[in-house]
Length: 195
Ligand code: GLN
Picture 1: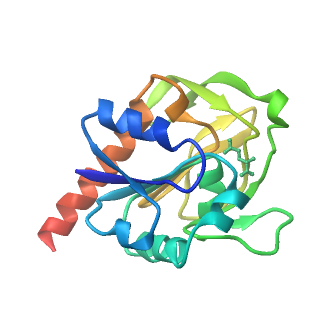
Picture 2 (picture 1 turned 90 degrees about the horizontal axis):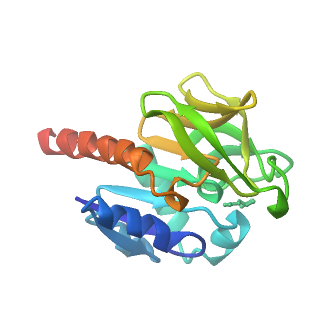
């Protein structure tokens, strides 16, 4: 199984480390051509504006096309912002792959970063979640399932093949959320093999 990590800016290496610990072939994706041959993609945390500005050519457009075809995508923090249909206070969104609205930097400034235990539906009762100037989910559409909340705010959600989290599972040694995503990728591979 080959999973790509969008390698434009942000916590790329950390995701690749976890994938390699789980014996998954993780690949850096810097160009649209590098999306072929993958079974899933991770959009890391970092700075969503920087990632969108530095993404070359039609990279993000291609990511959107794949998402609409059922290809599994996981966005953490800035990656979640890039995947959201709507960004509060911003006219335009980016990939628009999941029917949610997000508020950027809702958990405060860099100095307000924190770690807390979260209950993640179907994954863990005690996941150590690291929040760094994290976005919160402020609206979820009908087809979206909220998987975790922090102080009443939705911080992790899934719509079919698209998974998003406000926090950074790649910055802890807990691999349960990555394993959950790999489960989504396996399901996709099995479905594709049948088609
Ligand atoms: N605040 C950042 C943004 O708006 C996200 C922060 C993060 O990815 N840790 O893109």
